[in-house]
Length: 437
Image (cartoon, rainbow, N blue to C red):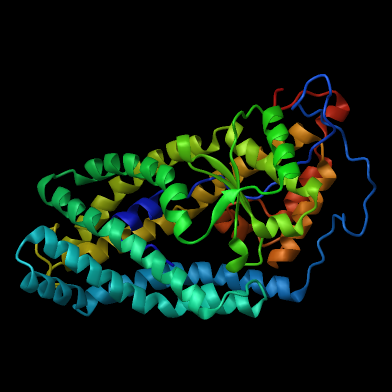
């Protein structure tokens, strides 16, 4: 479901999502008995088998699914902006403002009511694409068994969470826009604690609304992962499994949270579909994100990008109001009815900055691959994991380079397979780049 709310759109649109999302590969070698919990990297000793092969079996279905997914991304971006402009051009925004102000005398509460109405209208207009991309396509390609009732329930929860969180923030933002000339600076500063709070609270408050998280139940695998974490330099790590199989058949693992909410999460689908070496290898990649502090780097990157984004957003926003404000029946710049224009500006900037976000994300995902290989030396396990990811999610392993450059948060799986099979500096006596035991 799209983020169609004021600060939600600005923060989400002008910041990069958490960079730790994704999957990676590494594997665990035999333990050193003289140093319990420390993993001694050893190369893969098993020859390739039919279950451990390194060429993705690309089918027409995989190509078609990837092209649909990519088309939906660009269509969603253009359609979302068009909807916001339609709401302005037809006068719906002004009428919703008038309705809210007739029912509520206090401007702050009237702005909140307007925002709720705007959210409902945008959700209704974008629902067909959300339904097609979120429900029809996954069922068409056998990527989920979730019922329509289950999907609609998750959709409704997401809408409710966003309305509850961003409705008061939207009203606060309008107060700032009304009272402060360079409001972009104040909103930019305000996003910093919001980003930190979101990263801290999401694993503890938001994610459990949709799924059940529990400590990894497989005691033997849990101990192996703790040993691997110790070798990576991570003490007192927390590893959770989540019941994502009720929503998808695809696989994933990720790092999330900060401080008391920091954790590594494995989907139950990945536990069911990967062998032990491959599961451990995925965690080597995820531990790389943790050790290399990619989450904090991503937050810092977001802060820098939003500084530029908010600066440009204010100028485009006020230029548009000066040009079309009378036609749209707008008052001053803090008129609630101007929110769709601010959302449209934010969405356009986010779309144009997509290559920047994606390029940075691919960079840190590649670093995590390097870390996982240096930690484990399990190149073949990592490669076979990528093969399974591509075939399981029906993803084109070698998409067009422009699409990868603009849209992909990870290097394409085909190029990752090529890299992990070739990267073996230890065989040449060369030092590690990222993992230093």
